[in-house]
Image 1 (spheres, helix red, strand yellow):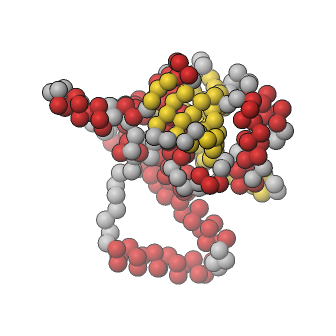
Image 2 (cartoon, rainbow, N blue to C red):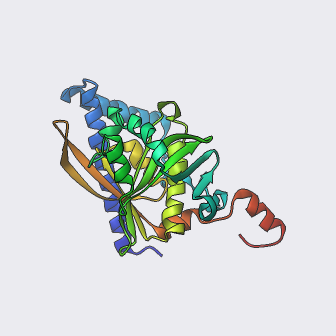
Image 3 (cartoon, rainbow, N blue to C red):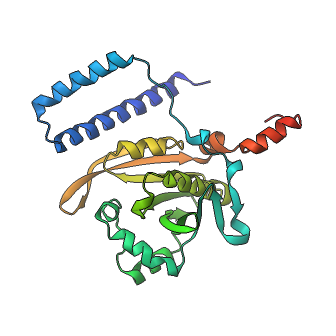
Length: 269
């Protein structure tokens, strides 16, 4: 049962999230050329939309366990160092994949979204991936390399790590590949490594990223306003974190086919 103190903390986190969303939305309005006076008009239009569409909103986070369960994963880690779900798989980065990754990093929208940044030179990036405190994987879609996901600051003693991710091939954006790769990496962190905690740093208050990470069970841990300087612009840093018990409670279940077989056999799922 949830205690009053826990409800208070949850409400505080929710209130902080709303402030972050408002801050991000305001910045977007300014970027579109909306003046301070016009922001009030926009707020009025938002209220009009609420009235027209009804006041009901979903009270709970839309978790991705409707899409994934651990039973859906094809685990070939011990035999081939590969994890797959659907058409997406991850396996450790090889030197032959470094040139493609270097090419992805040349895109400013990708390069400037990480702090500290990844090395730009091929040999330096290869050495970076071989550092013991890091563990990086190439993301494949249909057998083709399309992105990168992995761990920074891998702390064996505290059983925690920082996750970084990018889908580098622009043709693959919007295909759900990032969600699949994130699910596979969290399986690696919590089931194979048996770590306790995964955390993420996001530059700027990106509502889409916050919602995506929240769908896997990540919760907001803190916001650092104007914390890093990138290309002469101060940017906010958001930290979100996920613990193994939360993720396992959400996702550690048989697949749909396995569930049907167990039900047919009279087992309780």
